[in-house]
Amino acid sequence: MVDAVIKPPHVFGRDAEWAGLASFVTRPATHAMLGVVSGRRRMGKTYLLRALVEQQRGFYFGATAATAGESLRQFGTALASYAGSPSPFSFATWDDAISYLFSLAAPNRSDGPLLVVIDEFPYLAKTAPELPSVIQREIDRFQVEPSSMRLMLCGSAMSVMGGLLARTAPLRGRAQLELVVRPFGYRDSAEFWGVADDPALAARLHAVLGGTPAYRRQFLADDAPTSLQDFDEWISRTVLSPLSPLFREARYLLAEETDIRDTALYHSVLAAVAEGNSTRGGIANYIGRKAVDISHPLNVLEDSHLLEREEDMFRSGRAQYRITEPLINFYESVMRPAWARLESGQGNEVWAQSGERFSAKVAGPHFETICREYMLGAGQSLLDGSLGQVGRGVVSDATRHQQIEVDVAVTERPRGTARVRVAMLGEAKWGTVMGINHLDRLTRARELLSHRGLDTAGCLLTCFSAEGFSDALRAAADRDDVQLVTLEDLYH
Image (cartoon, rainbow, N blue to C red; front, side, top):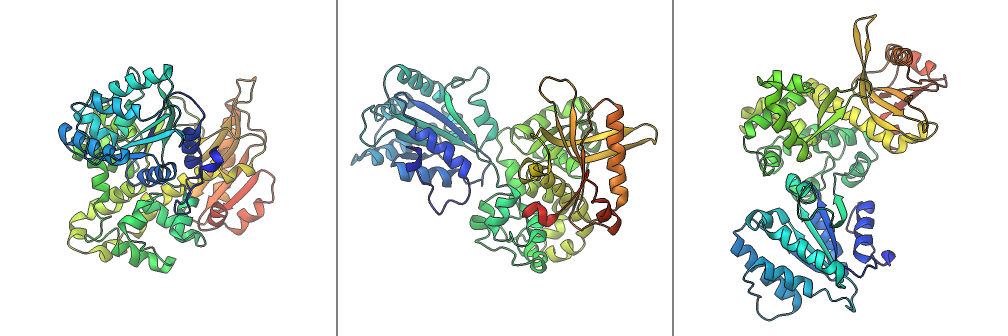
């Protein structure tokens, strides 16, 4: 039963991930099953899988960067230890090793299904490219013959792991589980760092470090800011200090991706996005390349889950790019322009001069992202009916010769009709007290979309603000079609 696989108390959050893993392991199938678990480094994949292996008394093997021969010896040693052999196994080939591994998964095992986790699988696939085909052969064999095998392949190289099940890959169509372990959401992250009762601090912390669990415990040994007043000192002694492991982390995140060769080019692309040049043409102009020349870097960054392409909700064929890793955005916006000064230990001085830049390039855009995440979760209660698509977009106002940016938009296409319904239009401001002018801009956007044939009946106009609202805007919120959302609302 799945209920028997109880998540240990030391595993924070990850309820959905744990439920998926537990269901995979305990499914009463009489044939071999394959799962693929991926996610960028520092997300806690190994921590999660080790906890599961310990509960199920399974076999865990963590690959390292080694030659094919050494990796095979390491695997044989680990497998012998698990099988209770007094001496290490000596396999001639990976073919022999995988065949023996599957032989351990007898269909009538008294301990139930055999859970096997091969972590950092890309290291093995790099030196033994035949390995996916060997695993495919065994999986196919034990689809016919009975087996209790529950094999999980795990890795951090997102482009490699994504390719395992793609197109003509040997393992395509063989997996019963494909799990991507993502960063904590902004609410879970606040709980994890112990700052949930201070939304202003939680939002700033998340804008810098995002929801990567390893940053608190492994990198900073639980050195967390104790209050909003402590945040400036904390960021100077951690992220901006050359003595801190976080100081060069953004660079390492890029260097660890196997498909990234010219790191200078990729940093330039990310810097362009961090500076607000979020379209393909804008990025190309910023780095001095033609738009066609940056297709490959953009694709690699997307495959690595470091960059996300967001379609414009109101302009077909238009898209903007967003950096998904907050620490990289912080690095490109605040650290990289002052790198020489930071390396010489001037973190306090650099941070003291970075307030406006941090607000405009880091905290502001990140606040918009949090607001969209809110609408995918607790914010659904603001809307009548089912939740459709959440994103952002631009509404062109030809009469006034301006573009109205909508930071948070919710649309849906009711069943049986081709007409798009606009359920909500929202604007998000980090460092600005919002006034009636912001509501007027949303009202104008709603009118323009209605003239274009979209269904705006019942469209809610929502102002999200981290600084608050003017008296006039608060008075306007008495209207049924106006909603004000504070930073406290987002977190509680």
